[in-house]
Amino acid sequence: MRRPKASPTLKKDLLLLLKGVAMGAANKVPGVSGGIVAFVAGFYEELIYALQHLNFKAISLLFKKRYRLFWEYVNGRFLVWLFAGVLLSFFSVSLLLDFLIEHYEKSVWGVFFGMITASLFYIHRQVLQWKKRLLLTLLLGFLFGIAITFVSPSTENDHLIFVFFCGMISVSGMTLPGLSGSFLLLILGNYNLLLVDAVNNLYYTFGSIIRWDFSFLEVPETVRLLKVLVTFTLGSICGLILLSNLLSFVLKKYHQITIAVIIGFIVGTLRIVWPWKAQILQLDAKGNPIINKLGNPKITGFDYYTPDFSSLETLFIFLFMALGALVIVLLENYDQKRRL
Image (cartoon, rainbow, N blue to C red; front, side, top):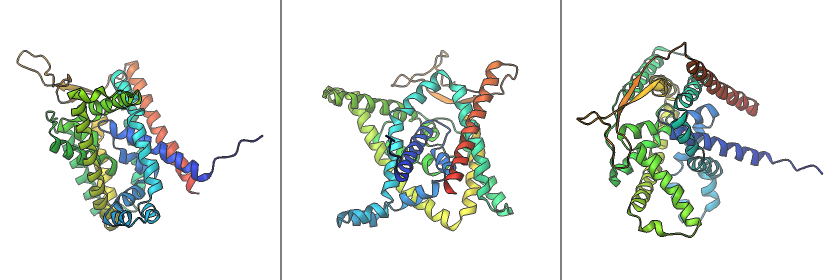
């Protein structure tokens, strides 16, 4: 007996779920933008316009109990499947990425460097004709991207107002290709607090709840991290809505200029994902690394260097770059066939 084929709608939903997983994983890595995944996978503008509809009209439809109209107005099916993938990523792929970056850091950066570089080829085709005005905006985007890479990380701050601001900033990586929200959190000093400690704390908290163990509520550090995560989430939601409305307007009115700025910005920030770099740690008077209250060394910046081309490790990293580029090519070819 033949197994019934999955419906086209289900296939589309599952593919969207996987795109959300990829987007969430990209947002977790400093220097990589989830917006690039949306751009290359061909759903960036749909994402922006769907988020734009999370407005007062949507709230009004909810209060009037016109749930079906609300669902259609906000493109609910698209948003639910996509963000289910993003959420799933935080408790699966993100944890795997933490492990891979810790043990195979250069290889991971190599894959992302290859992916971002290859994505530039496809993004630039959206510009119909490179006129002087577009070249100028490309240069401005490039200079702004370069400037961000030279900013030194700040110190960690768990004040809830600042955490809310970090939430608003962090979603820029989801809505602005090339602008890494996680890298901005690193600059603001709260990357480890918000995307490592708070997320891992939530993961283990869920494990306790499943075992019907609520003793974590008596642990001050656990409660503090939960408050931080809730505040960060609220800030992220507000940031998504505000940024999507701004970007929707800009994309409609200045589409080609916006694409040119994004391309310049991506090129300018490529330095962040260069595999050959070393962390510069903040040292005390005795030359020992300064450790923050969560036990992590404070980072003041990165030292970039050229690879040793005679090294076998360098060859492998270039192969990982090629692998990352191949992933983008395959995704783009699949998307083109799907549209035919």
